[in-house]
Image (tube, rainbow, N blue to C red; front, side, top):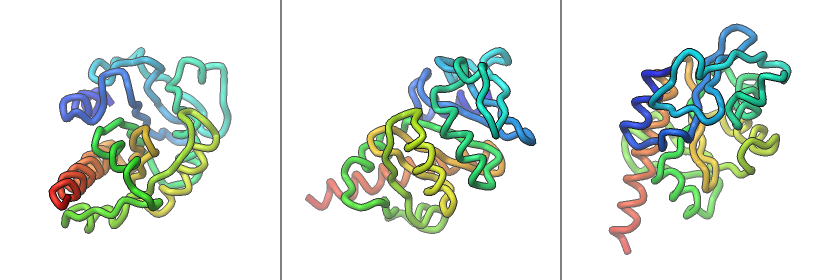
Length: 179
């Protein structure tokens, strides 16, 4: 988790204390704690929680714990990265549809389309909307907020996060050049 936290910050996919990372471990998940700087994750900065039910430890876990839980309950994900990439957030506010269509070959091939979902951070609405979007996709953008990417590994979730941002960045610049 520490390796990917550092990579996310280095690539400007998150600001240090925004975003969160989790991995599934059987019927439990390891998730970053609330307020932990992703480029400084350490053992005590991660908490183990049940996937099926909440507990008193939820109050120290990421504010997006409900979203991670709901994704694990509804998808085959074993790893989740929630980031705040700038161009993905911008594109989520510019599109008039429920998806962002990548214009780059890699985005078309691996993502096909990127769902844009709504919901306030840390809410059941956001959790349900995001999990539904990720049933058929590897990544989704929360309108005005950030991305959630899933994978069998953190490597895969990181790849999806970076590709969503690259696809949104290229689309943004392409659309600006057409004006």
